[in-house]
Amino acid sequence: MDAYPQLRHDLTLARSALDRGELDRAARHLAGALPHAPTLPEIHELLSRLAVHADDALDLFPLDPHAPAGRVAAHAHLLAAAGRPEDGLPLLAAASGTTPAVDWAGVPWVSDPLLGGRIDPDALARTVMRLCTAVGDPAPKAAAAPLRPYLTVVRHTVEAHGEHAMLLGAGSALARRLGEARLAVDWATRGARSRPSKLGEIWLGYAYRSAGRIPEALAALRRAVMYDPDDLSVYADVAATLADLGRVEEALNWTERALERDPQFDCVVHTAHRLRYRVDGDVAHLVALADFIRDHPDDTHEHTDLDECCRGSAWLSGMPAGLSRLPSGQGSVDAEPSADALARLLRVASTGWPHPPAAYDRALGLVLVEPWELLALLSHPAVAGAERPGAAEIWACLGLLHHGSEEPWLDSDRRRLLLELLDGDVDRVTQAALFALITYAWVDPTARPDVATLVAGRFAEAAGGPRARAVAELALATPELDRSTRELAAAAVRVPAVPRQRGRSYLLRWLRK
Image (tube, rainbow, N blue to C red; front, top):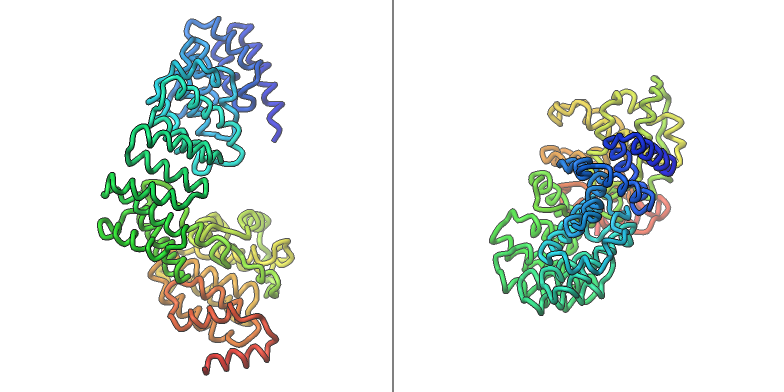
């Protein structure tokens, strides 16, 4: 949506309100205009006019806990105009943390070298660390330029106050988030040298990793452990860095050492499961990680290990390419689904998902579509002939999981309906139904033995046929699948596709052997 008409509208109304002396109304419209063009001179001129006419213009932009970013930024600019830019900067940084890609800090007073002499280095370090937490690691690409003025503030403050270890470390953390690896290493090195500490070594280790200097990163993180052997998060960092060097077994030793101290320490648990999966590719490690995430919703911070391990794997992170080439499995339609049901299905029918539990959660909205409509949609022309063949079938089956969820799994209608869809040859619908069963096994441990048995049986039926690989890919994503079936499925995935007769005889010979 083009924001320009709304911007001009807000500015016109703000100007008119100022002319009439309606200062509260003018303030509301200026706060609404700022997010659209935070560096527009016209907005700042109107803020100056408002400050002249108001006894205390700051009161027109109250800072309650849920204040919108535009109001917070306006308060910051008024503080700077009143000669208190050091008080305004944390507010502007808070606005940047809310919407990092907006150029909140691209105004002259932020980049003024005089600000570096006024601001307290400790306070600036805290502001930068809060900003780092808000924007993520790395920051979104679109945020690199808008956030760069904060690096300028750090540079000016260091020049004014000398080598300040905490500020240099925090500045290094922001620099590497913005892709400034060399600057991150420079500042972290100076900070660690100025005041050696565990935190300084951690910042230095992260900076070296961002620059691709893995051995130096490892050395810095080992020094951090020496400062505080009880900080298990550093053990996870050491393990991850060792893995980057290809020393996975040594990395696992570090996670085991940490887990002996605290088996529930989230950073180590995530790292350990990711590394174990890297060693043997067994999906059991990812299922265990998903269980841990479900049972520990209040982790110390957001982790991405499960997403990263699933990325690029068939069914774990999305629909495999071969699914669209399978027949649709469509039959006759006894009931016509509503247009609303079709729209809801197509709205969620993406070809990718971060991991199976995320796919289950995304399908929750389909609880508003009746089960008979979801079944009817499987053979609907708009689904069978969709631009992304297979996606809608997957989500229709996932939607069935959310109906009658209070019923015990083995006696549930959702299980019965999905089993009925497994009849017949392997096609897009049977694949989708199998994936729904597997997804439910990921989120409900009590269903795992049953689903593993069902998948193993379906794979045995398909073994040696032209669809063996298709079912094998699903089998490899199944929790608690027996070892022999998993090994056969892995072999089927590795075997190139061959015509039906040759494929069957080859696999049968392989099985006998």
